[in-house]
Each structure stands twice: as structure tokens, then as C-alpha cells.
Image (tube, rainbow, N blue to C red):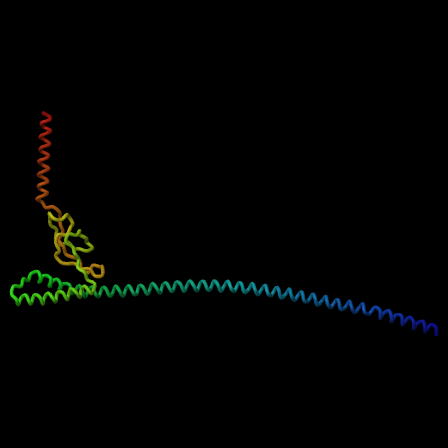
Length: 239
């Protein structure tokens, strides 16, 4: 009996000791759980941070690519716009040139009529009253024609006394002249015209060759006389 009682006492003490040790084991398990939770949280945060960095890096690369594409498209737009502007200007210039060519062709065909009017005006000398009336009518038509040419931008050249310019004039004759120097226009044989600053028709002109042969012969004779005088003076000095 005594032994049984002692065994019971030992058993109770062991239970009491086990009960005393149980809270310590529970607290250590909770600490481990907390530590594991903290580690998992840190790992998650690290993973999230890494993913965020990768996302930012990808976005930066994509943004750089888009900027390059934008710059390329912008350059293409500027080039196409410049090409179109040049094309538009070229078309406008070609249309203007074509218009000038058509107007020039038409006006050039009219100019001989103007020449005939001017020749007739210089030759006609109306004496009778009827002839004078006809002459006035003729002059009225001529003035109307000249006014139409002016409205189209046609202007006559004034060439007499001007220096010969092959870009404006066409030399038909050359003759000596006491009044004009060499290569200056002596007479206008056919009037030239400008159209908007460009040559519509070259003027047919007579060009001066400078002083004539008579002056040249006089100069030769003068030089001969001076040479003989000089030779006579030299001869007398030698004697």
C-alpha cells in the first residue's frame, strides 16, 4: 500500500512538472511561427521590390523605344511636308511659266501688227480733211492696241544711244559713226519689247563702229607728218 501511494505521488509530481514545462514549449512554437511569418513577409517584400524594379526597367526601355519611334515618325513627317511644299511650289512655278509662254506666244503674234501700225503712222501724211479724219480713227485704234499690250505687262525697249547687249538686242548692221562710240546703238530698225521684265522680242538695231575711215586716215597722215618732222630734226642735229 505504501509503495502504491509513493508511486502515485511520483506520478503526480511528473504530471505537475510536465504541466510546468508545457507553457514554455507553446511559447517557443509561437515564436517560431512569428519568425517564419516575418521571413515570408520579407521574402514577399523582396520579391515585390524585384518585380517592381523589373517593371520600371521594362517601362523605361519601352518608353525609350517609343521616343525613338516618335522621333523617326516626326522626321518622316517633316521630310514629307518639305517634299510636298517643294512639289506645290514647283507646280505653281511650272503653271506660271506655262502661262507666260502662252501669253508670250500670243503677244509675239500681235507685235507685227503693232509694227505695221507704226510704219503706217510714219509714212502717212494726211492732207485732206477726209484723210485727216481717217488718220485720227487709225490713231485711235493704235492707241487702244498699245493700251491692251500695256495691261498685259508689255513694255517697249528704248535702245538708241544704249550700249549693245546681245541679251536684249540683235545687231543687223554695223557702220561708222561720229556721234556714237563703238558698240553703241545708232538706230532702231525694229522695236524690242519686255514682258514682265523678260525679253519678249529682241530689238533689231544698227550698231556703231566708232569713227569712220576718214578720221582714221587723217590720224595716219598726222602720224606720218610728225614722223617726217622728227626725222628732219634728227638730221639737222646730226649735221
